[in-house]
Image (cartoon, rainbow, N blue to C red; front, side):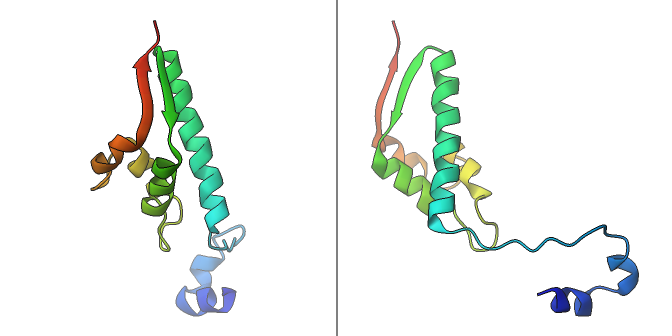
Amino acid sequence: MLSEVRSFFSPELLNRFDETVVFQRLARRDVAAICQLLMAETVSRAAERGLDVRVAPPLMEHIIEEGYSDEYGARPLRQVRTGGRAGVRACRRRVRVLTASG
């Protein structure tokens, strides 16, 4: 991998970097763990606003499927979580409970 980098970029440019880090592709379990953290953050923010939110497993699976890209890794997860990508609105019915706490 580093030999490909060296053949693509000039030595002058490479000398400007302190170090080179090679990332491995995320496994599905890694993406699922990241998704769990993002959804826990969402549930916590909703609770601060007085809402009780629980995410059904089918919704979590949908977010994992739609939010992973071979090219970008887990970056699209946030877009899917916030409804920024096409098709996410269709999965809103998978939210099990969304009620205002009284």
